[in-house]
Image (cartoon, rainbow, N blue to C red; front, side, top):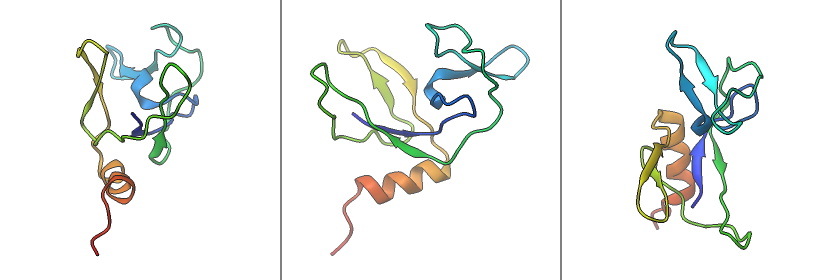
Length: 98
């Protein structure tokens, strides 16, 4: 499934980021450890494609606020719910009225 999110100035997507104890954005893209790059700005929302084990793109787009799940159904981090992500989702996932 694809999801809509933002990339930080470090280049990693927002699912790899969390707030530390000082409310500072920290990237955990290196196996849960900080990536070592500056994390101070988020870009515009973009479609972040995901792939199955054979490398084929997964077409379904998660709605903003939905959580990614493991194969066993464990809910992981929820996707961004900002207005810009919702607008992009409306453009990409919802068929236009005829």
